[in-house]
Image (cartoon, rainbow, N blue to C red; front, side):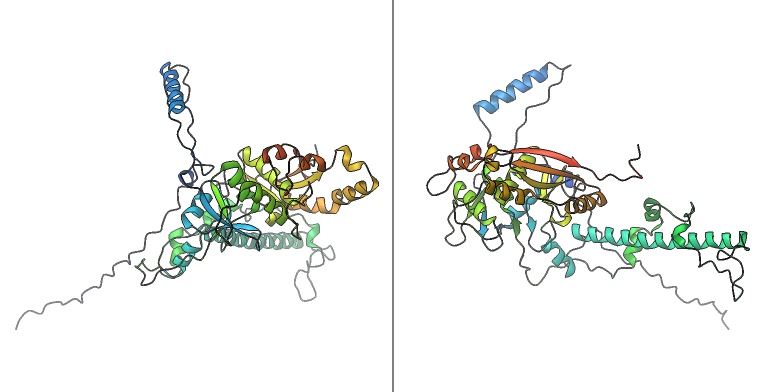
Length: 438
């Protein structure tokens, strides 16, 4: 008989599933390195302890003077005026991406801000791995919501613990502690609002709370498995276009000269004076005939403020979300939150606007604002940690505007017209007693 052998069952080694590598977030400093869709050629820096830097500066200056480099593209970027939406549509995807990456102009028609519908659609269909900026925003909001729930639960636990300690320490006081009708401590008669919240270690701040969360890899395990990108059997048509406000479009046309707006009916470019008149007429709730606009129409007031802050280097975005006209960003929405919120207020300090009782009544109605309105807007900005800035635009009398227009109502010199308007800025902060006692 042969010697029996110990036969062991083969052990099954399960290979770990290969995860699809997550795409890293883009380099925003490199992606948004240019503040405008134009090229600039600055002179080299001056180094005091290096005399050769003077020669470098002189050579660069002479070279640019002899052969001046071009700062603009060969062809202007196309855009189409939409009278229904009172905006300008940019349908070319390369142009839309350029305007967003170089100055944060416009918004996606199917997105909150950045035109990212194509990426979201590919991610939804499993053709792309990663997250868009909107998904990162939703993730931060969910984390903030969960943090508030956990903080409220910890506060309730701390209050219950404090009430239990007080019930044991003072059992003889009625309504505070002691045995209840069924042998329990009746502590519900004392209002919780009258009791100070103890400094309990159970109440972490947001940074400590985020560190206690599971890692990204652990949270990714809770998500459905991602499929590897495959070559689609069909092509996805991008249904999104870039939508520019009238102020943004006119700034790109008049101030930078990089956009050419065409009439969608005949595909012909619109001249700058005609576009200025169209924007002024379309800014009213009931569109006015061309050349029949007042000196304080909504477009010219908002554009003067937009041009002013854009010229100072701010990134100006619409602020309807926070009940203001504009939001000012230092570098852009992808880098930080807006620092200032702008409200435009017309000012009629010229003697013409108070010359007759009819004009005084009309101006008084336009300038009338209630303290309730101002308090509500200021409270909203304080809640989102923004500084409210009231921008007063001095409106010139009508004859100064008529001197710069022709018989058809088009402005002959837009630069001289804009210089008639002056801006005053007033920053307003909400006074809170517990923070401003000194």
